[in-house]
Image (cartoon, rainbow, N blue to C red; front, side):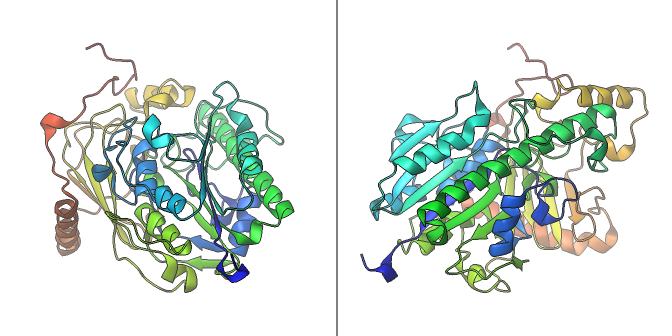
Length: 443
């Protein structure tokens, strides 16, 4: 193969429950992510990238297929895509790529799907902090005469925290507490633990970059850094708001992308598959619902979409919400407003949640922090995200927003019809835990 025909390697680093705000390249004043920041300084930072879901397996299924969760067969948490599903790594493999799935496999747990990768190495749950060793081992064993694709899936910064050791632990008194979280000692300790795992993820990314640099492959590797959903704290993970579905998205590829570029162009997780097929000069797979971001990578002012969409389905708790995202607004419709929208169940056993719940029951919790406890909920929510980045001020009922709300609702309904997404409560999965205590329900 001639040098000018050499296909680029493709590497996706995906964190588990990393909020977009807690990355240095996005302006966080405390969390240290020097390796991710370096990739941003040498590549492109997307400031309007959104996931299709704020739960692990539905989100990851969209990434692999370029389709929305309602179309992948893995709409709900822990559902596996069917064996016949069309994934973009299949197309890469057909064109000579050596494909690797390394780390967390949420959404691709079905053996028939996993076997379609040339190499698979999965988490040692007794030592999840050794993730980087799996990544480096995978790269070292690959055939050197083929381009590679690797999905490097970390478990950091997923709960439970305090696993393994941290080089320079963060202190509770230095964390930044978002306004919708209670500023308590318990919350600060958990945020510090969360920061520790983010920096460990960054360190693991750095070790792989070092290996690629030593092999002379870094400049020929197209690299993405992203998350599968928002942080596992109140009003974040499982929400289709900014802190639930907005992800850090940093792309590095020196032959194409100028150094230190920032784009405001709207992008979705379903756009990853068509983009990577374009980069590899592989024919677009059938059924893709996203658009290629290649025009944006070449010219950051380019616009490839006006709207992005997201789903909230079962994640331990019964749910059916849909969101439409523009560069200025997030519009959310809720088909089950009679139900509360609780925090993810793994948080309910933690001291920070119990402290918040106690304050709520005593009537001492500020309104801005009560959202995970209240019911009924609004059927419609509208947030002007330019000034309300945490989606705290619902303006759906303002008279001045009536026409905008009607427009966004029509666009959302049109999108749902286009993908065959129909609400049918009889087919929804039921709660498996109590919405306040998190205790497993007996059926």
